[in-house]
Length: 406
Image (cartoon, rainbow, N blue to C red; front, side, top):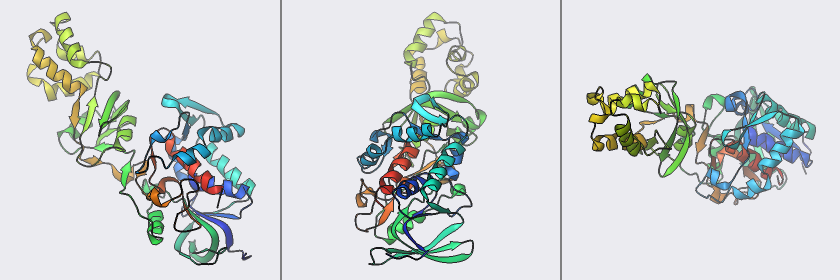
């Protein structure tokens, strides 16, 4: 085996969630591990996640919480390293955390607690981490131990490194200001792997028509709705913005939306709005429709809906509406069809949907099936989690799975 200072058993590209988990797991096995990070500091996405509190996992994690061309691919890793395993490490470090809605777990204090925990584990196991280190090139040879040769630019100093196992934990295209890039895809292509179609995921919707003005007027307003696209629905808050619709429901649905699709908003998810309005007509015949609706929805939203759907009858008592008119308005309240012009794109997307086709990757080890010693973990793969701690859990699980074998 090579003894050069520039030889490592394992080199990992990317010091984010999956890369750090892989590094600490491999180093704990006695492997000589080096992590290369292009940015000036590690774990930037961990630090900004969850509003700085890091939604680090979820109490209930299943393969159904992930989107992939192969819906079964994530099962092996999620079983090998579960949410309970990560929670156990958090509790061992006595990091205070809380459970929020939909079983989401957040740090009580700061995301720094999670990052510092991972860095402590890496340091204690002897994993080396270098920032300001950009991969220039990688090549493979037939030599078993020194299988991969790397050229790395570290603060304008060119270094040549070699390793037995090379792990791509580079993330993907989302939030380029935090280091998102397509380098992992370039490496995959170089070694003959295929890619699935990629889109911005967990991302707000934008509108370019009259709906944009509608949203602008209500910017800052949040309300719970049922939001649907392509027969997939989430009941959560939406948030009107100056550009369109954000909030948890919008981010979740964006993972299932494709350009040109409509989305459906049910503003009253617990109510059959047509029946409710017709009943209200008999019980509150002298009331205005906007007054009745304001018991369920904010006055600002009702005012804008009135302008859209019944502005000519704005001052007509409810009793003078026909049942057919009220049914029509009720149907819109329960099934409001909107057509986004697009999403805000990778600039604000929390994840990249799609990625390296898992058909070419071992689900047990994350190794490329046709390229020994080359591994891909985390977001770079075609595995995209829902909002709620699932993408971090995929990072921990896939990183751990690779770390056991590299």
